[in-house]
Image (tube, rainbow, N blue to C red; front, side, top):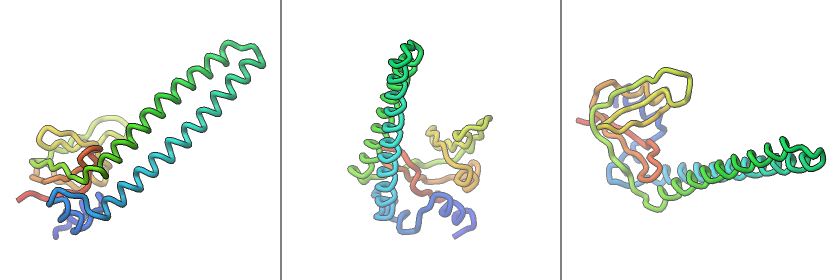
Length: 169
C-alpha cells in the first residue's frame, strides 16, 4: 500500500475490512458502530440544544411579563422560532443517519478527483469533485487525494458521509 493510500486511510478512518465490505455495497460492522455513535451524538446534541433554548425562551417570556416589555416577549418568540427550526434540522439529521442503518448500503462515486479550494474561513473550504458530485471534506482528507487522479469513493447511501476510498486502476 502506498503512502498516499495510508494517509487517505488514516484521514477517513477506515480499514481494509471496511473497504472490502464497501466494495460489496455494504457497510462494515465497524462503520455501522460509527454511524450508531453519530446518531446518538446527534440526538444528544439536539436534545441539549432544545432544552437550553426552551429554558432561554421561557426566561425571556417571564422577564417580559414581569417588566411588561414587548421587546423581551418578541425576543422570547424569536428564540422559540429558532428553537423549532434547529429541532427540525436535528431531527432530519437523526433520520438521515438512521436511514443509513436501515438500508445498510453504500453509494459509489468513481472518476477523476478535482480538488477545489474555496476562499474563506468556513468549514466548507475543502471540496472534492468527482463525476460532477461535490463533497465537502476536512483538510486531512483533502490532502490525502491526488488532484486529477482516478478514485473510487464509497459513501453512506442516505446521509452521503464519506466512508472509504481507493485509487481506481
